[in-house]
Image (cartoon, rainbow, N blue to C red):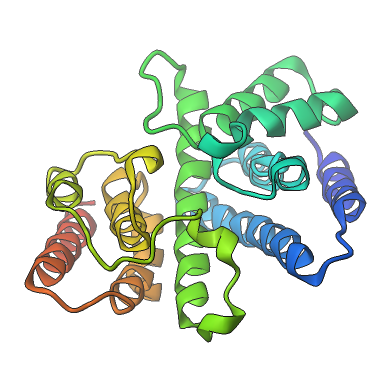
Length: 262
């Protein structure tokens, strides 16, 4: 891939999302949120890739993966009025469908096209399959890290906004009860992946997203998380309980050990 192709993809994205503009300001807010998220993920993945000293071509591939990883969110929202996959369709698959429908990646050679497609396909899975080749695993890890970093930012900004101005699609229709079941905390302390489908409340969603730290792959990503402290900021929007503080101490200790050892 060359710079000219990268710039074409960037320009195409800007024009394409305009086809999903909404008349209703509330719905347009949801579209704008996903556009902004995409652009921020692009910036984060560039920082992570730079920190790893990747080749120029790998950095371009990572940028295109970030640019298109959520492009399925736009037809998803247009059709279903939700970003919750269990209530609609898998947005990673929708992203590939959208790209294939427009044949947008067909200017790339097969290997690059496959690499980007696989990274998009696996970016929202609970875990990356072990059988993938090292290059595919690298790009899966890059987009998964960058995506998590910016989703945490989105959540923090959402809960720091006046309640009447919050966009309800962000919290996926979950209950407003402050309860967090013990089994959710148990999964966090075990460092295990949690499924969105099993969540009951918004605060359980927050704990799930806090637990993402155990699925972070690169030192530079951990440095961003420590620098921004979005996990701490997200925890600050929850009732201050001993269990929450224990979880925060556990997370911060994990980040410190990873940074010290890498």
